[in-house]
Image (cartoon, rainbow, N blue to C red; front, top):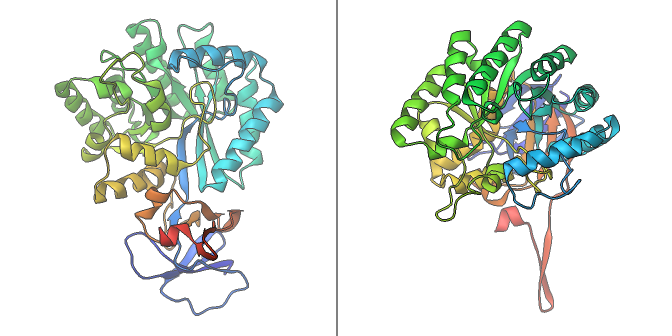
Length: 424
């Protein structure tokens, strides 16, 4: 064995188990593995989850908040304008170093599967080239997928179609889109048709920024679903944001949800960004700005959670922690029920992995040993405490380790060590 994890707590269990890993694969899961090994970790009852996945982040823009200026209105459109100014200053080294830093943050907190969007509205493709290099250099540290994302549109941007196609030739894994950004609805529909045509031509997956607006008349998701059905691309298609669904009348929304379920596509909510960006034109009441997560899940749609931004023109906060994104979604979608909390944990593990077409995922014999050990000793404390990742394991190898938090509280002359996740 390469590694044995002792006294692990798994979800939906009360007793501890041992996990043996060999050649990057989970070899055994038993109450007590008798075999001794040179490399063992005694987890003392800490919970072990499959490693987190982030299906929606923008690594080309991370850590640029305030450059060249801050987004004072907090709107999506001002963020896009600021980014259009900032990307004129991009260099290969600039993008590479910022993206590398964000990946290290994410991996240290348990996320090893990452899908990043990269702006292709740039003749030099400097950001794409930097992230392609990142993908190769960090392959033993994180699994990275790259989406060719036409941030400023396809038909409304000069040579938008050609730039999108060229990015696929350079090596992007997915075709992206942003139909609601085009000048007309007709152009938005044509953009989607181009996206599916390119995906079929180059055998790529599809990842659309779809209806990220409060406009109840923005209805491109139905066209995404229809094209996914016609091309038989359901499992290869992902729609991110879909925040306009929050504003649709219920009759249309529930018709649309049935279509989404029928199409087989995945939907990714991005609670951190959209909690900030949406509802900016509302007085009171202010819309929450998230898609209809509970209704989509109830209809059988695969719904996941993305972190989206890390300190960029759209979201000035964030640190790459998927538990933080899940925590916010739980509150905004009112998923506080016991079974709903379980669903939220599924969203950043199994659902996200399914959206990214990751195979052999999960804690089971024969699956890839991609695991995160959290400083929590109960499944339902994971979202409550948002604990640190004590160990992160990729392909059976430890790629990150964080010492356990311990706080000393003083009462007069007495002191007591409090291990937060055990005692709170």
